[in-house]
Image 1 (cartoon, rainbow, N blue to C red):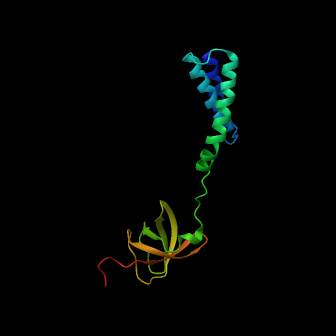
Image 2: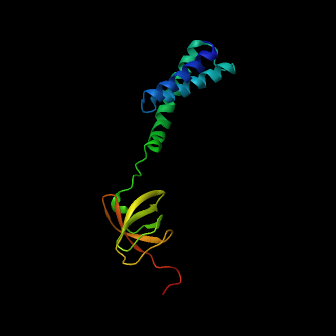
Length: 148
């Protein structure tokens, strides 16, 4: 089979993976088809039966050895458990009156915060997360460096 047909099959399988998620099976079949196309272009895989056997071998090897790590990486379970936020530092993104509600940044995400502190806090102040209620973080100011 001509090399360009294998490349076309590989690209088609990539498109199938994009529009119909198959948990990376079609992606690796596409990689195998493109590998056979490259091998055919280089003159390493000349007959159809060698190309077909190579395609099967590449596809099985790719699925067996690469699908698991790629799937784990793409569907990472590093979701933050809300209870793990206690004790973290947040940076206020707006002024916050004593006992008031405002916004702060934690790990690149903006959160609603409420302070238990009676004094006003300024934008940029660092606070510690004391407790979590739903999507509201209860915070108290962190001691400032050099303050006794």
